[in-house]
Image (cartoon, rainbow, N blue to C red; front, side, top):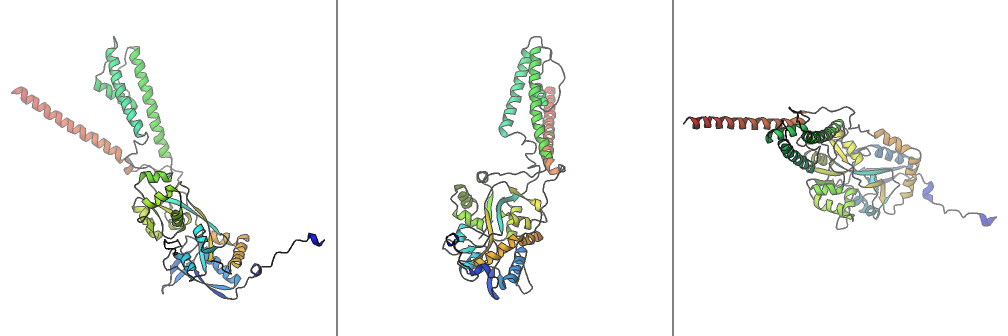
Length: 425
């Protein structure tokens, strides 16, 4: 019956419209890893390549319009200034100088107030990067990091205490024929912790039991030390010095960087998280901000610097040497990203339909795969030989011992010569 008929949805002309009648739109774009690459012609005009410009050409043909693509004057993406104005591509749209943002512009709360984001075509993952250290860590702590500082102090106290007790037990035990001097006892106990033996076998049971206890303790400590060292040598992953934002703040020696005008800066500016606010106010502004990717990679190589970067941008910039940076296991921001139009633009539904069609038919996936780059793994299945720099601390320790022994020998010879002269007179 007529009462069961559902009411029709009002007809929307934009749903079926596929011809913009040759309209010419002012568009802005910016360098975006594999999505948008920019170089310049001899006359200084920008040339855009990548899967985003390829997709733009496709929808230009499908919808019969032309996009006059250019770069924003300040070469920024778009953040809100304290005076209420906007920078970058977002600023161009807000000021009416552009209609269309052709890039994977992150959709944030602040930007949503001034531009209309279209259906997302990608996700921007932001991670923290720093210069990759040596697989073996610092050569100066290579042979001491097996135990914590407090454990080394306890171990030293155990060696000293054990030496004194063993000396007293041997000298106080009735009938014991093997008695070492205190300095000799210290040398023997230290040797036990280095898997060395000794000459002479104590007679009394009490001395033997104590000596066996010392040997067992030395074997246990030496096993822990060796196991850590072997595991470190067999692990081909790069060491990760920081695992939390708090750890970066507590260290205090690194500058924290981010791109001026990027969405990550906007999120830090409006964040209520006290850790993020402190990280931004104390470690970022102003010396940590950068405007060009070439600048940030130089700083990562040459300074104590940690940067919040787009993962895809890092892959694009480091594809020739992907293992020079390390990504810290700290969760940061993830943004849905895509094209954007000026607020209340009549083209919004038309472009959304075109993007939805490209997503459903796999066009965007194919274009993205054509420009994608697969980063090789930085973890080798083969062991890496220890180089001279990593053994330098051990050699310097040996050299220090040799020099010390030589100086003491010289002093002994001079003292002996002095005594001979004194006795002769």
